[in-house]
Image (cartoon, rainbow, N blue to C red):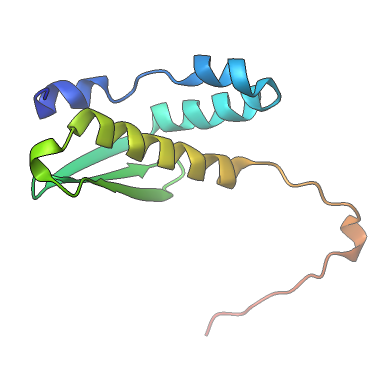
Length: 116
């Protein structure tokens, strides 16, 4: 198992190449999400020897938090856990930034809420 400091330096590995091969129509969205991830402030916490918690603060202030856990602390792989967290974060970013087509904008219901 690599040391945690070495793993933290490797956490921004590029996953875009694999996405190009399997989902060429989503390349732009995934590259955008990956770029947002790379620009973000990241923190990784290792607890109990088998729990990895990754928090990512985007440039707009939005914070994403994901985790990975291995049932057996002796078999825990920090690299694999961080990659799992990174994949979960990138999936959330795709959900957030995926454009939505509005079929008829005139039919949108508008509402406002006044704070007290």
